Length: 263
Picture 1: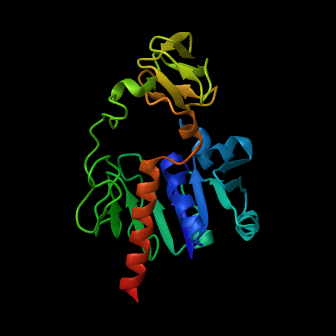
Picture 2 (picture 1 turned 180 degrees about the vertical axis):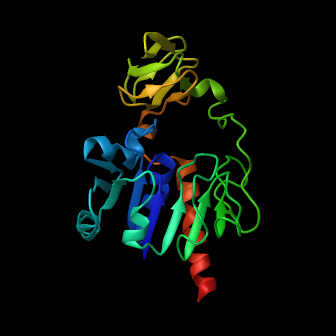
């Protein structure tokens, strides 16, 4: 079965890895300059590195339908730069999963494929997709929503290790981002972690740098540029998160449930 996933960030990649292991053929799309901070577990990295390995699965940047087919034949995930998702018309997927996590619908329609799944807020089951998968941490994380929408975006990140908004590394000015640490580094509160333009960015909490933008990305004041995990477990920087795995399970359930109903 052919699945097109819009987005190739860490949550989309968690979905993609779960589907790939279950035998689905995958194409994932992203923008020309991805802004994924958890780059070590995201296929979006393939956009500027050519390929990206996440756990035991490799994503490869493709430029044509022929390259996509060759990549899938090698049991790899095809990644394409396609902000408008034009590849949908050419590849004709059975399933479309919108995992851009934009907190709003950027153009997905329920008619885009036989099965259309919206991930997170911004979608309404039965209106612009067949089913929505919840992305908010808590009791309903990963749950399939067959009527209505996911929890609205609160603007406050989920609590990890007793911290929420303090975990986020945010740009302090407009300009180009330049990291002063690497993903996997341990930092203390107050440490210099990067610059946005000429403006320094300091850690608001101690822990391990779990995510960080690639150098040279243009950022604006307040833009999410990284992520610190106060639990300080370095190994977690290189494996799919519990949240991404739960959402991936929800998407898998959604696809198989809808296919069963259609039979």
